[in-house]
Amino acid sequence: MTVTEKILARASNKERVSPGDVVFAKVDKLMMHDVSGPGVIKLFNELEKKGKKFEGIWDPDRVWITEDHFVPAPDKISADNINMLAEWSEKYGVKKHFKYGLGQYGICHTLSHEEALVLPGEVYVGGDSHTNTTGAMGAFAAGLGHTDIAYVLINGVIWFRVPETMFFRLSGNKPDYIMAKDMILAIIGEIGTDGANYKAMQFSGDVVKNLPMEERLTLTNMTTEAGAKNGIIESDATTDQYIRERTDARYSSLVGDKDAEFSEVFDYEINKLEPIVAKPFSPGNISAARDLQGIEINKAYIGSCTGAKLEDLRLAAKFMKGKKVKIRTEVLPATQSIYLKAMREGLINTFVEAGAVVGPPTCGACCGAHMGVLGKDEICISTTNRNFPGRMGHVESQTYLASPMVVAASSLTGKITDPRDAVKN
Image 1 (cartoon, rainbow, N blue to C red):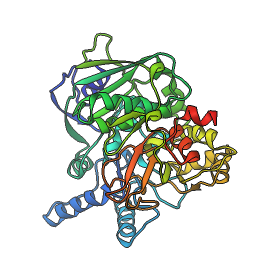
Image 2: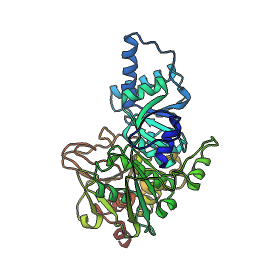
Image 3: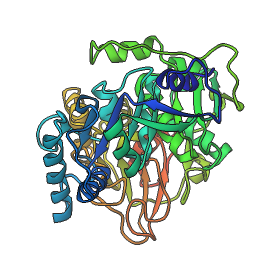
Image 4: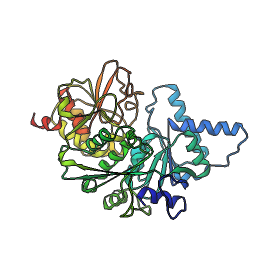
């Protein structure tokens, strides 16, 4: 069995499962945020009106809530939703509620690993499509809709159809100018945005084994953009070290069998890879950064669960140190803890001295809600994960997706720029 199959087998008390099997799996962890949470709460309220009585939820210690999409609250509805979440978590005894303006908080898919909320071998579900991110920890991590999240909150289990697994072997010596964002964009460019529909995308190979944890998380994060049910990387010494720096919680990791069967196997020589940019209006519409040089842009955005982890900020700061940005540039660390680490390392000073605006952790600009949306005809190069029409603002704006290094290099020229050429300049 593959690692995904083994996790689902253990969670459903089965010795063996195969792709296509339908299983009822015990859930280890569940997440809601200020967009998905109110929808789930509405379902609870509707059930109560129909006579359903709730003494409590399945296990409040396994549930966590974050305020991340509409913070700082841009309007009254957003503020009310945040208050609704606070009342609900207090009512049902949920202690892990990461509240904006009260210390540690941030983007849900970053908190999941930054706070070691999800551990190897676990089944983790969240009310957001990019829950796949945390599969880099060696967990089965998948996004669910409001109804399914409500069901788990009541019962602690949910059904899954066991997905086929696509295997991606990344080999070679990774060039310094290549990041995980380039790798996953290259993969999506090949298989398409529907190439992994309801499949698991598993990553391995020498390159993956040598990637720091935060880079691995970028790979699994954007499996969502290929339609995958989950993305996963088997846990190893890097995983264990990352977790042990954050918690002493016990866990039982799993790895796939040596003779595990995959639906497809893909091989990539990373040393041959160019810095990649996804053009509007699809993450699969890729091109080499150098083929797009000269395209003028209005904004550079370094943020989101995909591109504002500490390692992302470190690499972006290397390009911006001692230089000045030529376009509107925004940097938003993914969590408050990352913000503090970046401040202690002098990264925040580097960004501000370069002329960039550094803001609080939020999903606002990434999802086109607030905190820096794009206007008509504006062009942005961004470390985020989606670029369909209107994703970051006006439906007639354009977003190019790229690695933090490409975005930082482009902020200094006002045009899409390959990081190798920025170094020359």
